[in-house]
Amino acid sequence: MATTTKGIRGWLRQAARVLLPVHCEGCAIPLADDPIPFFCAGCWSAITPLTQSQCTRCDRPFPSSVATTYSPNHVCQACIERPPSYTRARTLYAYLPPLQDAICLFKYRGRVSLAPALSRLMIDRLPPLDPVDLVIPVPLHPSRLREREFNQSLLLADRLARHIQTPLSFSNLVRVAASPAQTTLSRKGRLRNLRGAFSLRDPASIVGKRILLIDDVFTTGTTINECAKTLRKAHSGEVWALTLARTVDASIVPDRVLAQHVRPSIGLLGA
Image (cartoon, rainbow, N blue to C red; front, side, top):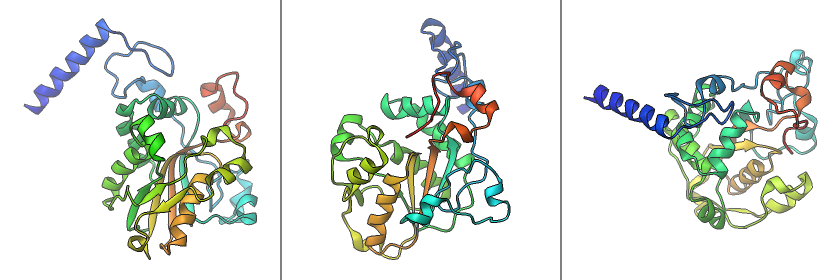
């Protein structure tokens, strides 16, 4: 019965796409029965994981593998100068098209049907994780949540928490200060923008708890770090962070990847 129902749904989807054509957001070819909403199988399979040497604290990619050849625990200069409040941040993919397009559709245009596929990308590339007691998504301010109607980080965290069989806490850590979007600000502006932006409704409940923070995109790491700082001030245990993607400088992206995915107008990716 389940097989029959699935077959009927597939036929109906194909019929609907004949009447109302849908094109791939990556390459614009018409979609037939591709398993990922808004993207063809070819574009989705081209999403590129980060594989080069990275900082062992914030996961920032290094321009050369030499950085960790003789020093496997090498830390970037930014983490040396300002050690972050989290124990380790891990990120899985470069914020490049078509993943960049998918995240923007998901986050800013309300295409929540992409949540299963995006969370599956995280699960498929999940690095070895130390045991944690709670999974916590980076929260949105209530005004932003009303505007967007969903928290993209919560949708990702929910599926990830179920996969690693760890409780999800989504109402304790809250954003208490409404402020301009981080994408519009410089690094210094981001730091000022988020000071005191997060709070805990029940600080006692996280005392000694090891926590995994989940967010969609790591840009400067300011948001993740401020969340971790709030948790650590409440005497949580160690805090790890996991993000789906991170913005990277074009100089550290292999030329073959840039040639395949980066639009001609893009020089520096991220802020």
